[in-house]
Length: 176
Image 1: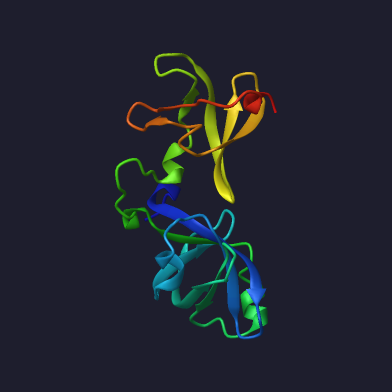
Image 2: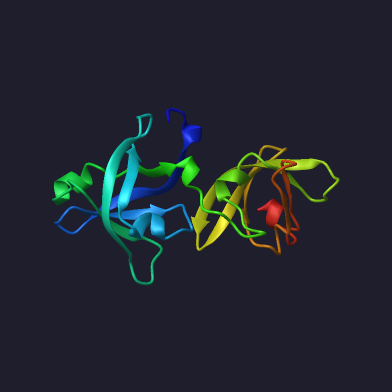
């Protein structure tokens, strides 16, 4: 596995936790087992190559979206702090199966955004943000960027195979 398409980023190491080498992870995956079940994962620095690391334990912080994990060989705060900023990866072949109407959020990047199924594109999905709800960052054809909540009331139709999604934004959402 060499290319970025071979990997899924499932979280980012954001801070050391305590003195025993634990780390906080901001997840970009809706599958908690990626942070709680022991096993091999990979870390990647910006512009670096993925390297294996063994996840020993993990737990979600109560009332928060963050997870606290412990990796093999990371035994103190200094070692943990050296990993902050790196992405946690799994092989792209490790994608869980989804039910009807569910999507891997990363598959939405690059889709055309339309107001009508047969209508022209008004922009493209360029990124995703998690802030309570998942938000699609859409670059409109006019060059402005808007954040659109990825909820069924606003994004009622996603056609991955055809490369588009349909928006039904409330008044003013695309003008913000």
